[in-house]
Image (cartoon, rainbow, N blue to C red; front, side):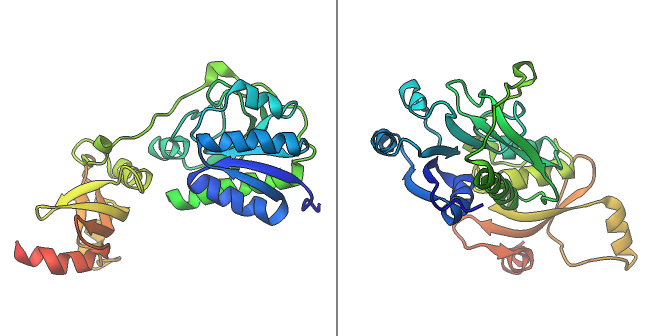
Amino acid sequence: MNTMSTEVIFFGNGPLANHALAVLRQHTDVIFHARTKDDLTEVIKLKKQHPEAHGILASFGVMIKTDLLELFEPEGIINLHPSLLPKYRGASPIESAILAGDNEFGYSIMKLAKAMDAGPIYHQTTVPNLPIDKEHIYQGLAEAGANWLVEHLNNLGEPQPQAASEATYTTKFDKSDSELHPEKFTAEQIFRQIVAYQGFPKPKYQFYNKTCIILQAHTLRVTDILCEAAGIGDQSSPLMIKCADRNFVVIDRLQPEGKKPMDAKSFLNGYAKNH
C-alpha cells in the first residue's frame, strides 16, 4: 500500500520513539515531531490546519490533556506501547518484562486515554525470536508496531476495551537500583538486571575495589565450569560474579568509573595485577 500521502503528527522520545519514527518517515508524511510539553501548542495548531492527520505516540512521557485528545477523535491519538496490555502498564514495560523472566515480548496499538495505558486496543501481538538484549527488544517491538501501523493506519477498525482487572503496573527506576546484589539473586536474575538496567540506572559492581558499570555479560553454570576444568568448553572469561544459586555471571564488557569501556581481559590486565 502506498501511504506517502498519509500525514502523521508524531509524539515521542527515546529508543522506542526513534525506531518507530524511522519506519514512519519512510512510508508517511511526518509533518511534526512533538518532543516536549511546549510542542503541544504547535500540535493543536497543525491538527486544525491538517484535520486528516493521524496522531501517533510512542514513549512521550507527557500527559495529553482532554482537549487535545478530542481533536483526534474518533480514532484518537494512537499509542504504540511495548507490552501486551493490560500487562506492564507504565514507564518501564520492556525492562519489567526482562526482570520478570519473560522470554517473549510484544506490543499493543492502543487509543490513548487519560488513564495511564488504559485505552482500548486496536491490535497487539508478540514479536518472536527477540534476544534478551534491551536494545534489540526496543528496536524489534518499535519496528514491528510501526510497520503494522503503516499497513493499517487508514483502516484501524474498532478498538476493543482492555480487561482492567488483569492490569499490572511498572515503575520508574532510580539510581539506588544500580548496585547489583548477587548474594540475593540467581545468576539468571543478575544477568537480567544487567540487561534491564543498561542506559539507566546502569548496573554496577565492584571488582578489585573499583566500581564498574557492567555493559555486557552472560551466565555460566557450575556444571559448565567443571567441564572447563576438565578441558571441555570455553575457558576465555575469568572475570565472574558468584550468585546465590552458586552459578555465575561472566563479565564480557565493563566500564570502570572515570574510564572508557573495555573488555574483561583488558580490565584484568590493568587492575588485577595490582592486587
